[in-house]
Each structure stands twice: as structure tokens, then as C-alpha cells.
Image (cartoon, rainbow, N blue to C red; front, side, top):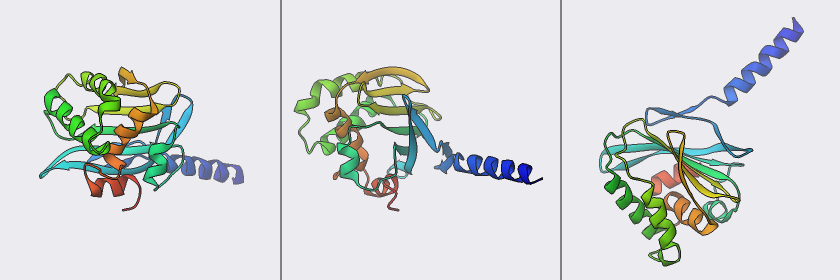
Length: 187
């Protein structure tokens, strides 16, 4: 009986830790992987534009942190998951949103990573439907890999690009301050 109780307790503990987080009506996993590294959900939020919910997202790190500058500067595995709630975001609108985000993130100095931004934008060439999932996974050895629904679209090398990309949401000029606070676990 004691052995069964211990086994049940361990099972309950492990399953309760791995429960997904529900945000914006969709579930985000409690952890992801970057190669062999397990990344844990740091914070979640919903990107809204006007009164529309566009996507639910999660920031995944090796260990929880609310220090945006440390996260941005860290040359270690991390990820962002974007689970689309809104149906029908054109490829052009996606690229325009990325460009706006990079402008803010880099304080208008996109010149050093212009070619990397162009390569990144070239990966967004389909209309995004409700339920589509983009994973942006950074690995120091590879760079930032972009996945759509689990399929690798491409990889952009460089810590400089990762900083600019993640800075869109958690930099000092984020696309949404409320979303930034949620991703950093401050709200």
C-alpha cells in the first residue's frame, strides 16, 4: 500500500508539473526542447491588435527570469511559441508586422542585420490560419530556427538576430508593454 501511494504521489507530481497553460483559449506546453536542452515556460500572453486576438504566445527559457536584458543578451537556448487565434493573416501582413517589430527592437538600426531580417521574412510566405503554430527556437550553435506546425522552414544565424527578434516582445520598446510583462512573469 505504501509503495502504491508513493508511486501515485510521484505520478501526480510529474503530471501536474507538465500540464499545459491555457492562454487565449489555446494550450501552450509547460516545456519545449532546443536540441537536448529542456526549456520551461517563463510566461504567456496574447498579442492583440485593436480589439482582435492575433496569437497566444509563450516564452521558454532554461530557467525562469524576469530580467529582459539578461534574457536578450544570453547566448543560450530559448524559444517563443506563437499559436494563432486569428484566422487569415496574410503573408504580407506578417512581414509588415515583423518589420515594424524589428524597427522598434533595434531602435531603428536594422542595417547590421538587414540581410538576416530579409531571410527571416522570406520564410513567411503563406496566409496564417487559426491553429497554426510558429516556434522560434534559438540555439547558440545553429541560430534561430523557424518552425511552422513542426516543420522547419529555415534558420537564421547569429546572437544579434536573436536579440532583435526576442526584443520585439521583451525589449525596452516592445510591440505591447502588457504582453512584455506577462512573458517576463511580472503580471
